[in-house]
Structures are given as structure tokens and as C-alpha cells.
Image 1 (cartoon, rainbow, N blue to C red):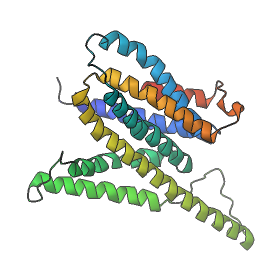
Image 2 (image 1 turned 135 degrees about the horizontal axis):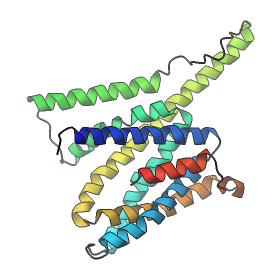
Image 3 (image 1 turned 90 degrees about the horizontal axis):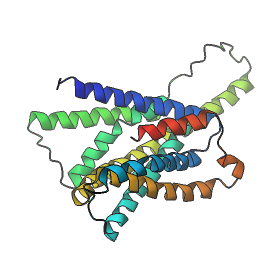
Image 4 (image 1 turned 90 degrees about the vertical axis):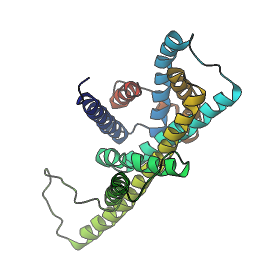
Length: 261
């Protein structure tokens, strides 16, 4: 196999994730509920994955015990339900660019969690150890920069400047509120990435106990569908908010469902 192929796959995956952030953000801007979005996304993924898991792993699947199912439920709660809901709320408060950039904190958080669980080691006197520490520092610096520096708003279609002081004051207050929301959204994403990183580490441990990857994914999608429904029901009580139509919301659900494959 050509050594460049893995890098091409990684690039394609990043492009897919970027599309997910952009389309999801557009749907949220149109008023689509982030909580209902997660429920429909996980429900669609469960419906699509279940037949595949049954077809390919029904004979080779490892035995299921109550403890394994409980671990799957907890993993789904942490790595999918909590993570996705926090991330999408953060995306609603910030932008698709921030969502894409803050994802770079996942390797950093995963690295720290692996260190705590003694699944990873660092030799500070070695080149590889120094490289790891430098990589962690650079990623953290980037995340902090994104969180606290928003930059100017680019609006080439409107070059008109307010001339009156009371309008400037109003604009100033709006900017402060936007910056606070921006920071809050970024930290929501970091919290989501923490849950996601914990999910990655714990899932690796669970795979040693239950090696059927497709079934593991399907069960987690199923459990997260139930959990996401409870969360969405708590925040969205109006039936009209749950109705789907041919718009960006449906496109986002379809796109993000295929992304899970």
C-alpha cells in the first residue's frame, strides 16, 4: 500500500467533518433545535446500522452480559449524548471555523487521560517526549487563542459606519455580549471534547471485552437515541419543533448520519 494513502484518508475525514460543522451551523442558524437534531441523527444512524450489524456480526459476536450493556450505556451517555449536545450548543454560540479548530484539542485531552490511566508514557529527556509536550502546548495555545480572540467581523456588503455615539455604545454592548457568548461556546466545545476523549479511551478498554465493533457502535447509537430523546424532550416541548421538512435541518441529519459510518 502506498504510504501516502493513510494521509489521504485522514484528509478526507477532516473534509467530511468540516462539511458537518458548516451544514450543522447553517441548520442551527435557521432555527433547528440542537437537541432534536441529535435525537434524529442518532435514530437514523441506529436504523441504518442495525441491519448491517446483524448481517455481518450475528454469528461472530461476543456474548452480551448485563455489565457489558451497562458499560455501553455509560459510554453512549458520555461520548455521544453529552458530547454531541454540548458541542452543538457550542457550535450555535460560535462558528463552524471554531468547531473545526477546537477539535484539535481532542488529541491533547486524550493524551492527558491516557497518561492518567497509565496507558501512555512520556520521556522528557527523549526527542519523542519533547515533541509530544511541544505538540500539546501548541494545541492548547491555539484553543485558548480561538476562545479569547474573536477578531473583527467581516461584512463587505455593509461598509456603513455609525456616526452617533449612542449607536456606537449599543454596538459596543452587543460586541461584549457576543464575545462572552463566543467564549462560553468555545468552552462548551472543550467540555464536549473532554467527554469525547474519555469515550475514546474507555471504548478501547471495552473493545478488549467485547470485540464486535459494529455491534458496539450500533448499541451505543441505540442507547444514545433514547438518551437524546429524553434530553430533547426536556428542552423542546412544542410538537411543531419536532416536525421535519425539506430544509437544511433534514440535510444536516442526513449528512451527519453518513458521517458516523
